[in-house]
Image (cartoon, rainbow, N blue to C red; front, side):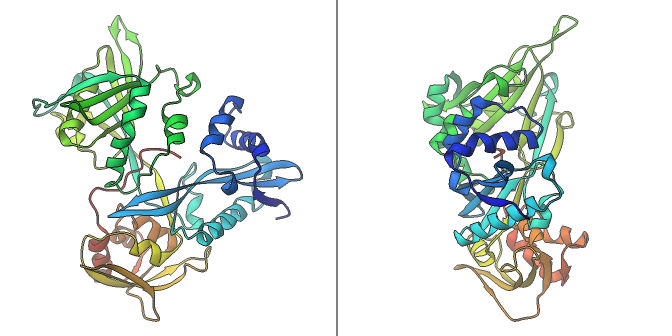
Length: 406
């Protein structure tokens, strides 16, 4: 590749953003540059230059991802693009190589991303670690099987009040939910509460609702509506942008509130959990249409660091080989041992119980994908009892969930 690749300077952010927009088939919006600057890390924002023109981009949000039993430093890979005029020239491969070298050198054991195209990132060692589910239900069919009296109340608040109190709920949920990321003050301001009309898709501005018990916040919902009528009857749509709760009572109360909003015919909720309790709460769960999508892809960059940094459901030990043609330092045979004192993982000279690719390890890392399922698909090979043992060790509740595209 005869192009220069380097981090961008502050003055190059607009050109960086233009490249990304055209590569994704979007209009460039100058008004988005300043809000983007507040959350971006320029020193980790790579650009590929053909002369003076930026023809490729890749960025990272540095954060600590929730993993089973804890959290670990993670490179949140984002803004990856190549101009249509410069595809099939090795630009993406070189950006990924440069980026993963940087992740390793910074001591981050994990990288994670949302894939714009699902067939791209497996060859760079990323595995599908979490799915999200788009939900849709007709409001007339959205009844609970056993409605219960609620201990608290719902209250609509303005953006300023939500901005003050909601981060505590997000953080409380995040700490026990593998796959979630923390939000900085700038992230809350620029990504959650910044609500330009261009982002609404014909819906209203955000509506903010708290669920409180004795004045204490237990959960919240952020949603939009789109009015509509058919033959004189209300046919509006309500879109749940975010619903989080720290108690079962708050979770039920917020969904009951959503189901009770007037002039709505259809309720939609994108990127919800795979193991969403709502399904089991409905009197007619068949009416809840569920459309699963891939969401978070995970790449293990440091095998011992990643595996020792999470908790495990069962005691046990397995020896496995990781194949990794893209990151040679990851490839090798490892011994993972889990007991009451925690987990240890080290390289060994031994015959492995099973072997798998780096992308397969990433897929199983958060507990959302089973080694046995990958074995039946021909992706994991080895002793069936050891594979079953690994599944028992890696299993986790709740299943991984990443409710926000980054």
